[in-house]
Length: 483
Image 1 (tube, rainbow, N blue to C red):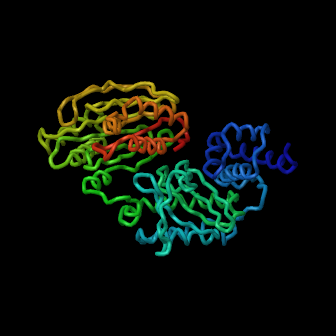
Image 2: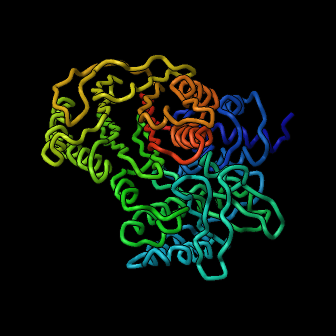
């Protein structure tokens, strides 16, 4: 039974949600991003007057609708169940964002932690930046000063890790030491978390969560930009020194996660002890997604040079407008010209029409991709065969029709070939089982990719003898991508 105030709040929220002119799914996604903890069906039932929500969740839903109304016009805002911070000049998020932008001009990477700390002052909170390592196992704090050094926080079994894994705000109430853990992303790529120290009463303030989300979005962009011309942020994310071969591979990778309105892709490479020749690449546009995975071999001194040549030739051919057969031909010629007949690369080249879900692919001697329809692996895509790249051959393009929410999984033989102490391979069957479990658990592609690589590493006995690489993508045929 709702109180009179709760009933009035429900009516106002339902009215605001309607005036926000958003699909309910998008309103719910905004609510989750702000830290809501209620499922889609429960929110739908609440808006229809069939279910009550806890005060905090009702406030967060009100704020999600109010944010949208602010985008359109300042219309009839939904009320909150408690006082929240207003948009006064001293606390207005614009001052924090402007200060962060101004401070970042010509700033070296080492200054980012101090800039984040300063950005929290207008909001009367303490902000620290924690970046995830490249293996996505631990979160490392960026020090604003020498005394800020601290131990890494595990991605598993910590509130900070929960915020990173789920890309949802986590609140920890502990009196004067209370804090919010806010996902740090650049677009949809997960980079770490923000630690926001605040008074315990502020944990349930949806306005503070929104301000922190905006600061996080800007800091995520700054992490990516500053990493391009300084070493401090990348060094912080290294759990061990890289070899020259590993550095070459990482320098050629695109962002590990990217998305458009209807497509999300996420990949990961775990190099072997003697880095092999695994690489992936992709390009997303309004109409088409291009995906490719390469596994090079046969070169002296290193297969990573073959992989680099293959990716460079593939990108050049793709950007020149060549079709899949033409892309493969250009890579053939580049490998042959550089290494003669002593090197080759297996690969899968694909393209997806984002309007129709039509998948076209070419397989150059590579493990067959898997197509996952929600809840089950539909098929192994075994057509479109041709010789490995560097062994000239035209090839035949195969096609498949995707359904909304289908996942395409490209991987290298190092993933399924990893062996345990008894010599048992990880195998395609176990990969399929993992994908089914990930789908039933609702893991988005970045988290499914992270968990898959870690499961392979846990399976193998001793050091890796071959790179482990996976590229997982999902076509939604919708306007909102849950990345």
